[in-house]
Image (cartoon, rainbow, N blue to C red):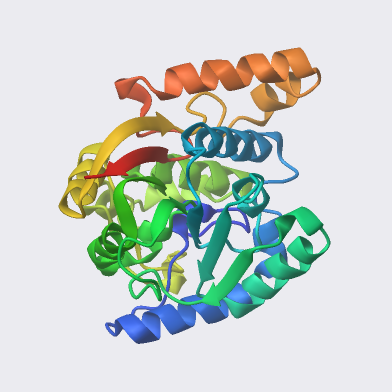
Length: 302
């Protein structure tokens, strides 16, 4: 659907070609050109900082002390990687389609001695270059499954192959409702909302809500193929890949698209922490899971 400004994550995807290999190649090349923008994705606007903090806290909650080998699929320029390598004795394997993103992440890691033992690998989640049952925990944050479009089940099956029994997977999804909420927010900021609402079918709003799939159509601001998931669909997809969901949280259902709420909360540490706790409580209520900035799940390998 509907790629908005530089921060519009839910509507990013690839070319309309039917070849998975060509689609992945285009995706990697596109993110090669977007390294700086991707690094800034969770900076600047207060609600973006809020979404980053909530994802980071969720990841930390489900990182097990016994996890010796952690796979980070789609690290981009390495926003979350330092937290994954923060524990002594563990190893992080970072796999990404974008070679430029990996280079940027490695440069940042090389400035910090404590971030040694990170393996940077160019590869695809649909074909992980890892042995079966070789990973204790997998972290897949950044709508990676949705970027895989029609190959999402293949990517999840690969994660099921490499994560050990009783291992952990932390993964996020973009829901149709959250995606349209994000798109309308971005369209309003660009003074395009009236245009979109006059022709919602032209901009695939109805298609995203009805089928969950966004085709590639740049002239309609649909810059990527993208597959959205409801919570029920994500749960079923994870179960087919051999995972059982143990926790699910909407990312910032209160302030995901509100500069004012997050801006006021950031003025003091106490108010900021209070907002984080409230967002986490509301975000785990079933009625809020599909709004805000998408939802994030923790699952165990059966």
